[in-house]
Length: 145
Image (tube, rainbow, N blue to C red; front, side, top):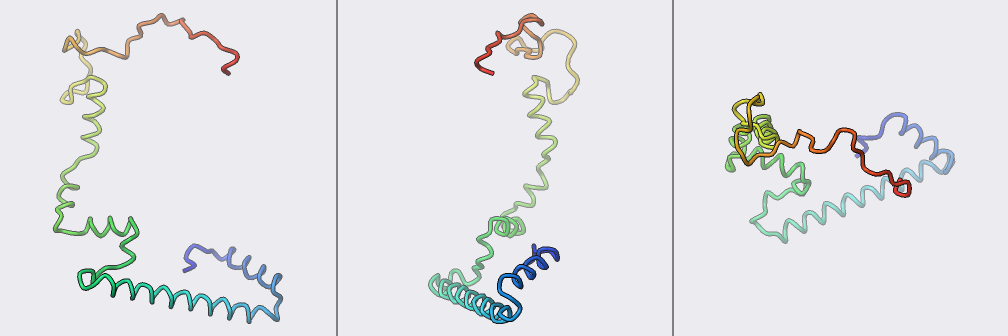
């Protein structure tokens, strides 16, 4: 329950509890807090049991932890019936990204070196060449800055 609380945070909480409640009332406060936590756990377990009963026998292996998206995806990736492992293993992300990058830059995916001759197809436009003079700057607008 308190997996993310470190030693320094725990000591700080204890010191604050002693300062706020005092050393003589602190044991009773701890008992009340623990009783409340137990009641909340019992209530949540009872609610889970009721929901499982209402869902029926089709959902006998339903776990509430599966509602967490990370757990659900991890469970589905481990499922052999879907064939996701084969798809994941057959997909090379670096190759796909290289092909997309080459397509965006107008290069053939087979050769990564740009051709030194004229354009291989007449309908491609080379966006790396500037069409306006190098010293042309947009007008300066003092109100916009």
